[in-house]
Image 1 (cartoon, one colour):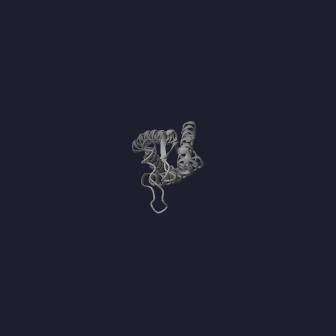
Image 2 (image 1 turned 180 degrees about the vertical axis):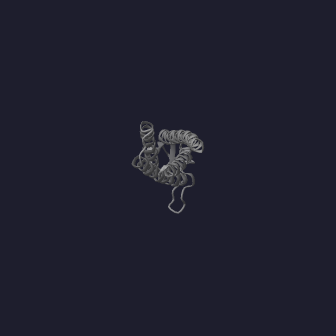
Image 3 (image 1 turned 60 degrees about the horizontal axis):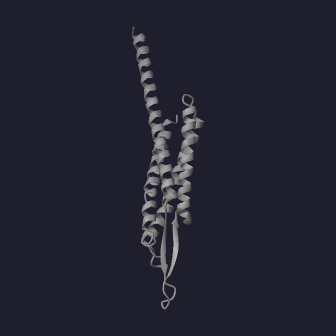
Length: 190
């Protein structure tokens, strides 16, 4: 009788463990989809930010100002290009990792878990570095630098700055989401 109760309890515990494992996979899938959406949105928002404006330049005080049509684009700044690339790489990696994890549902080996963990760690580093680079250039555009005589760009191209700015918190949030995925991956390792 005691032996039968033990087997019954083990069966119930096993069923509970399967449900917890299934819900954990659902949480991981949801978080990966969130990372996919955040990185795609950040790359798109920064990639399409553009403003064209006529700027008056005074070369010599005796002459009238010269009007020049100038365009501000994210592709003109290497730090913004790096941030767009980092987000695009993270977005592509996330799509691939979602596909791999869905295909290998029941048979996740330690090797697969370790490779996903390492990939997530690389994405954390990539996204934080992209955020840092783009934030530094964004701050330079917003405030300028008197010491090297760089003027504020956002004073002239305010629309561009306001369109590009949301990309930075989106990328930062995506990096934090990937950090959370690293913790989840580490917990899963046997």
